[in-house]
Image (cartoon, rainbow, N blue to C red; front, side, top):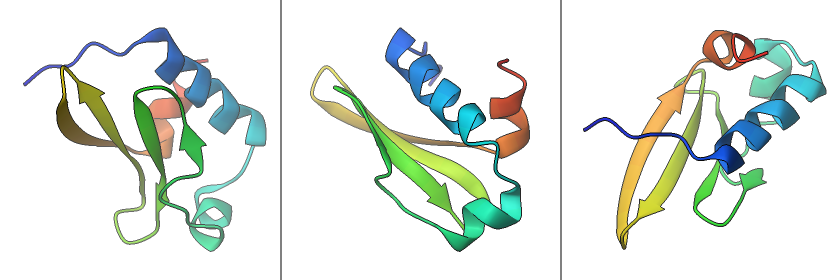
Length: 75
């Protein structure tokens, strides 16, 4: 399934970029709920070495992950 990101996800990405941390630094502070909005919740997972999020759309939960490199491309 292809999901369209809402503006609030881009706001989360801006927060991640503003932190200016390396992947190693993110791994040290691993958290599965560091970033939250009305429909998104997630954080960095050191096992996956990616940011993992859940999103609720029409009462259905979906999961996705993005590596730091992809989030940084959103600048």
